[in-house]
Image (tube, one colour):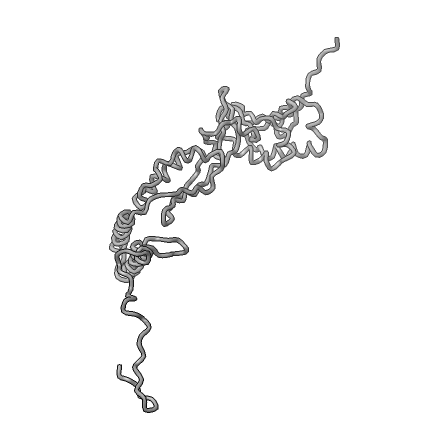
Length: 294
């Protein structure tokens, strides 16, 4: 740059403040070079190489939508996913944390035992369908969704089976769900607050009767057990040993009759051993037998 003349005096051109010695740090060595290996995405530090691959995938995916249709686009998408999983694995992203969502304390240990993978294995090479199948093989679990969360986490969202009742059959007890399916890991002694259903096929038939009973909280509060009779109908056994016999059909109508007798005549407090509602046109009752006088 030529010299500048002001007021008859020659002034030297200004010298840049940057010294020739203050060159950019070399690509090899030094903290600045090391920091360049990572980038922040959403507040999470990720390898810069992975960040570049994610950017490449976004562009490639857009190109596939623009250029291809039908099976060709799907083939390209599958190829990109497989190629990217392998590339992520080669970068060295390994599983470090597993987060369970929607899991109760009673089911947590059984679900963890079913997960057949280990911390430290390549995250991208994990078979998520197999993880899902393993989790859903646990009796507590109705369904599961498994997904990766970069940089190093696996998230498993679980919907558990509703625990409906304790089923007693052939001197054994089981916890069943709302479809009557047994939850084998559940211990019935831990669920004393659940209704008790008794008898052959009582598990499969319990959903409907319990729905009707739970709509009648006053009656339900007195129930000791619901007993399946001849795989056709129910006896309601109350805590005071009263037996209410329901018909095989039209159980809701029979319970409506009982509701009226409870509200109008307090029939459950009359010391009756049996209240027979099996005949829609008649009511048969039987009192408790009293011991003969000495």
